[in-house]
Image (cartoon, rainbow over all chains, first blue to last red; front, side):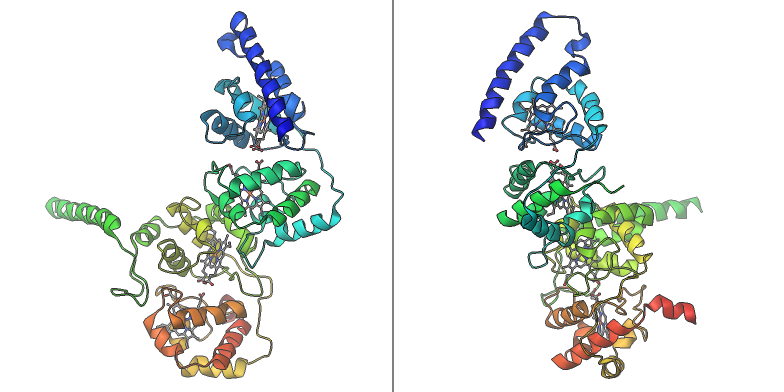
Length: 210
Length: 237
């Protein structure tokens, strides 16, 4: 986490610089930079093709465009917060959200790998069947068996396990509480940390069905 | 004529206004507590019944339920999660709205069926969708076949008067289909209804079932779990 904070600080400084540049140049209509330029900023953390290789940063490739736009809006409005993304979003104008969302949504999600087969097997059980004793519903029910998701349930296949763990912990602790129907908070509340680690490891090995 | 019509309209409007007020003042009553009336309409249930249901929309809304009741809505064989396919829409609406109102206790499911997880409109849609489904997966049955004893108990204790000779229930009266349901679920619900823990027990059913001992409850549950889908029976007639 310390590494991330550091990176965030650097980027904030970079952002301030970018902001100054924007103030002194008037070539862009509405002060909005072209998409390609903006993508350099996002690409630094999420990879240019949206398949982030930094474990704590989510892969954006193949997420539903409306979902991405809503998350950006929520970061901007402070309804979802993260020390890094919340800082970044202050540099981005709301008018850019749609194009960014469309771009990342159109990228192909890369596959993930795991070298922890036992954890993966445990995670598969939770993902496909849920946990009967504690009434955890199967993740597959909402996110689909292959994790491909839908317009209401975000794509999970190939996602970075560290990011998935962070989100599940955040939902569980109500740090992330911007899910419109509050169902993901209800699911995560019933998961313990061991189950979270296992299911996150399984998620990354999921490949979208042909 | 016009006058009569306008009187009807005015009274309809005031009826609606009255209902809106009742919705604010409505206090749900649970079985065993003073003032409990079985099958008393909650304001929400009246609303759902008025709106009707669209099975196509219902299929989409049911996504959030699949994690427990499974993608085919047939539940799990052990009976922790009941089969919902082919249940009468009226029964599904009664159960869902009473769970939302806190009359029927179901803490495991509540966060996924209460507002905002499911809107009022979606309740009728889901009920229409589930009613249209047929189960293809085999349901859970008792360990040993006790259907002969079970059938006799079901008849002698007048269970069939409400649940039908083929376990088909009664849509108009909101009596549930009990045929081909999972054994584990049937057994659990009979006890929850008998003891009142379920919260929305029918007092006449409590009377009918209270005479049964554990082994007899098992026999009835086994018998019902072995009945064919009631719609197969209706089709063959």
